[in-house]
Length: 128
Image (cartoon, rainbow, N blue to C red; front, side):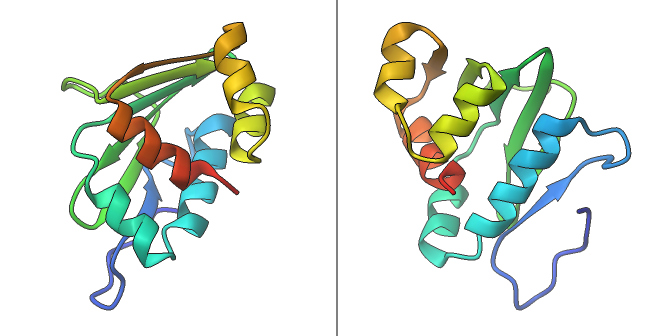
């Protein structure tokens, strides 16, 4: 998953230390890589300025955005985060598939905190 930025490519996903990455991080990187091919979604991702943390099943992934890529990290970011999402892996999968988003939030199975704008942009990126 890890690769260098090529001049013709506007935005891409990269896994930091892929040999150590857990299932959650690999799944997120795969979804992001596919979605970031869309220029509109890449433009939305570029507007997320601080890391977004996703926690599920004891796994922790930080999505760190910069001008040309999103890096999926296993370790907590050393800076203030834009948003935090917590839920079971199956709940996150439901959200990615566009199912029961509101129901999961209202029932407490999916906990979201942070910037509403960052969360909306991330939701668009995580839809499969």
